[in-house]
Amino acid sequence: MSGDQIDAILAQWQKERPDLDVSPMGIIGRIGRVRQHLLRGIQKTFSEFDLNAGEFDVLATLRRSGQPYQLTPTALFNTLMVSSGTMTHRLDGLEQADLVQRIPDSIDRRVTLIQLTHKGYDVIEKAITVHVANEHRLLSALKEAERDALAQLLRKLLTSFEE
Image 1: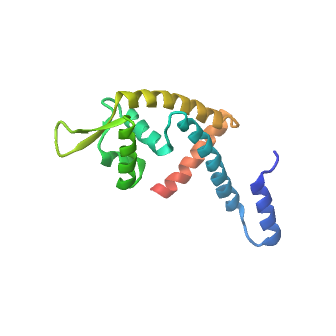
Image 2: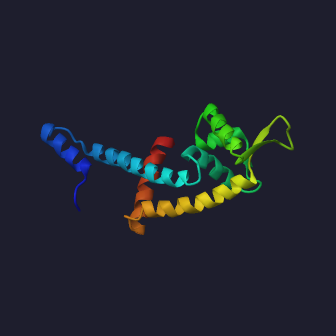
Image 3: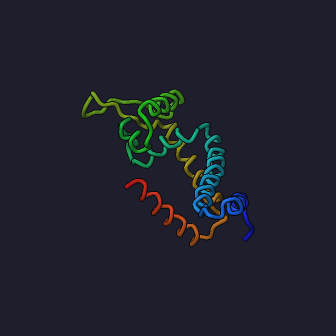
């Protein structure tokens, strides 16, 4: 297997500071660079639907919540781990594009629900299909067993931060 740019960086550090174990730089540096490549590839797909990643996340969260495809703004921003201000901005844009609508809760009129519109449903149905195919393409350098191993390792690392 040939090296990458991170290998060159690690070799430089090894030469200059042989007393340091810089191996974590390799892992964290590669995760960072892979993230940049993935984000570019994913955003390209979202832009085909005039969406950005945040807007896609809102539509996808509503869609996967099941019928009637509605949640409170609080449930949305807690799920997506963004501030209420960020969520309001996203919802305003999606509402202007007629992809979501704000509706009063039938049980508690003080509560507002965010619901996919018919147009929003159609957009996310098409976008999620293309997005998943794109994600398969982005990970195509890895065999299925490698993907499974990577998923397991990343899950272990992520849970160490989020527990």
